[in-house]
Length: 140
Picture 1 (tube, one colour):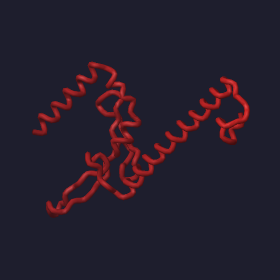
Picture 2 (cartoon, rainbow, N blue to C red):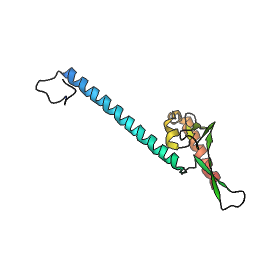
Picture 3 (spheres, rainbow, N blue to C red):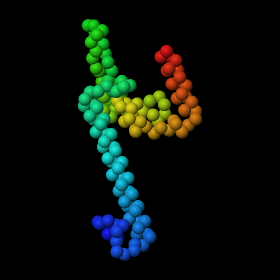
Picture 4 (cartoon, rainbow, N blue to C red):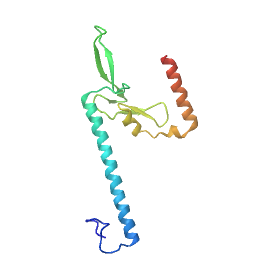
């Protein structure tokens, strides 16, 4: 089979093993290019958001600080995770109190760098929900 042209249109019958090999190769290339495109698109959107200085909804990248002179003026200060400042890098993360979970400038970046091992452990999941309930109770 000639893979430079359309491999499924041919004047001769291909062996099953050749056809399976071609299909496997096409699927591998498709999966690689698709996942690479999605990753590049996500990275582009994060860099665009970071470059625009937009504050995330959860205030994980910038914090608002009131002016010392009056309480009507607000300044933005970058949030830091360890020695990494969200003002300089959009990909800063740090370990959260929940095993395998990371927090960072952007939740999407942090979750992609997390192992999520806690969510496969019933004790850890229970601890997660208890801490969430306590946070909600303290907020009220």
